[in-house]
Amino acid sequence: MMLLYNIGIKLYSLFIRFAALFNNKAKLWVSGRKNPVFVRIESSIWFHFASLGEFEQGRPILEAMRNLHPDKKVVVTFFSPSGYEIRKNTPLANYVYYLPLDTPRNAKRFIDAINPETIIFTKYEYWFHFFNEARKRDIPLYIVSGIFRPGQVYFKWYGGFNRRILGLVSYFFLQDDASEQLLQGIGITNTSVSGDTRFDRVWANAQNPKVLPLIEEFKNGYKLFIAGSTWPQDEALLAKLASQYPDWKFIFAPHEIPEEKINNLIDLLPEGKAITFSQLKTEAEGLQSGDFIYQALTSNNLQSLVIDNIGMLSSLYAYADIAYIGGGFGVGIHNTLEAAAFGLPVIFGPNYQKFNEARELIAIKAGFSISNETELKEIVDRLISDEAFYNNTRKKVANYVKENVGATEMIMKYIDKR
Image 1: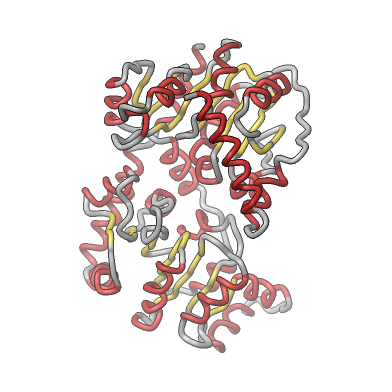
Image 2 (image 1 turned 180 degrees about the horizontal axis):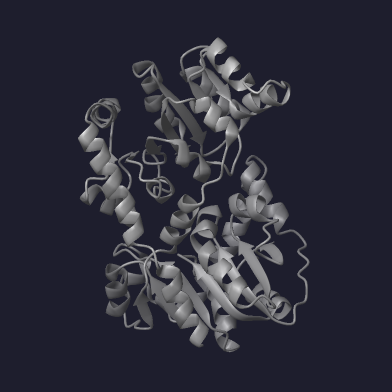
């Protein structure tokens, strides 16, 4: 199996290099790993995140470790360009790198360079050679906010090698009891259920929301529907809501923001009533009057705002009344908790089963899955027209998030004792 694993890593590298000829994300993946130069560090704490979502999920632990050990160097690695390119200059880390391919040589070279005394991976990504090198050197390696499902390879009859990788982890901090039971079923008992650190992150964000004057002026007292991390399949349904609810304002924050996709989305919206955030910002900067935005919005009758940048979404939810979370018509929904932390009813597509929080929100009737335009309009109609239902939903959502905070404290108490 080791031979097959190593061959698989090489084949993946070749595939990405070929894809880089046509795909910009693959190109960034390749160029970011070309001729890396790692700073030699006397001692460090190493955090690895697959992508941007895992960074935000693990951020409370990262911040807590920085506060606990301000003298230690912090190294952050990403697997995906969508994490690295956005957080490569984060002040929470001394050094930010792409994770090298998982080969014996790369693992030894990288760990030689950064000399970690503690390694923390968030949620998933299990790399044999990096984990094995850490085990050889007796470096504690933790998985935080880990989650497992019965259909994963670790629990199949042919998953022996993958179970071997799990056996190299020092300790698992898991999101739920089901994950712990699965691991115990294959003989892994170095576990505890601490919950999901994302709750801590989104709760903290909701307690101190960022003020966005342009968004305040755009909303201008209207009710606001926000669609976050959307894909074209979501947008084809959602755009119709703007015509159906002319007395509401809408904000769309697409998951991907190439100019072509932004223009396609604007074309779906009522003609002459949509503007990008960049256009709004440019217009605002070119005028001096205190009520310039109000004048622009009322004179142009603008109803929809399309966010054409990355990084605003978690703050935008503070201004919303209802939220839709994208991705549910693809491989899976994006982060519902950012919206839920503000007590917003959350709507999403049908592919949500892999996400605990989505299933739990549905169970308490605070989250709503839709499969088509009719179902979308039915739930939006009810939330808008039934005030008692709407208020009760918001209360349940807010309580759900509040009751699940605390994972960071539990994890840090354990790590601090080591």
